[in-house]
Length: 336
Image 1 (cartoon, rainbow, N blue to C red):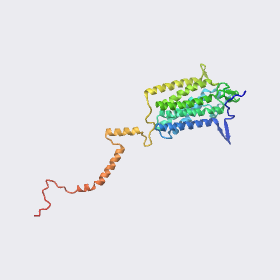
Image 2: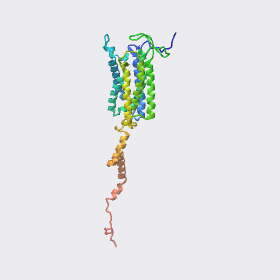
Image 3: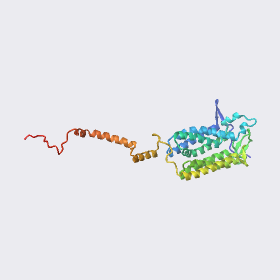
Image 4: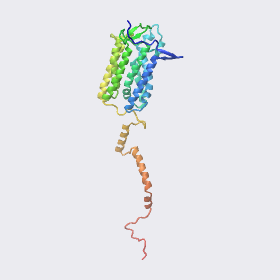
């Protein structure tokens, strides 16, 4: 009996002449654009300047790609350094294999460098980007569909994904865990946006919420997968990673809320000299207290002095004439 299922692409690459166009790479690229677009909108809403998110992403994305690949190669080293394997395949990122844990960790290092160069607090930038990262993951998971990878147990459910026979896989219909994770990430993005508006999250708490919520979903989805993986005490390595990272995210969220409640008032230096509005106000107040006049007051004083000099020339001319006093008894004329 025929059953419904999600068909898989017959190939994950289309050749445009000598140029290969790979579905996996397209999904990653689309995800990056979505994350930067949404992050830019949220950054501007928090008082930042347009384009800052993209400038810092120039640092974060390459670091993230390297980190994601390193995590995958290290945790699945037998795929590249085992007997009969070719270690050169470890560099073929287009064939799939990016670990989100490594991507976020090393991507954060790149983002930290970019933020330092711009004088921006990393937690504020991460908060703005958090839901965009979740949507980027939702897009990127469809790259696994093109490569026919990351599926779960066999099933005949109507939304099962069809997998064709190939290296290290058997033909059949399986749970589309890539689809489950994609939908979960979309839900995480909306959760972070809602919570950020409802509770005014700041100082990295929106990002911590994204991490914790993602880990919850990754834990049960990872448990459904059947691809080869390392196990510790009967659980897949990524399940343990989800548990540890979830705990760290929750601890950071709670401590941050106690130590630094509220949200940052200034997230980025302004375009006029690198001081924010609050800094200018502080400078003006300091000037009043110390007797130093702010730059705007000095400029106004100069204009007033120029006006007084212009209008006061006749008065200065009169000052040159001798003035009569009560002691001056000499009459101007003694003519009888």
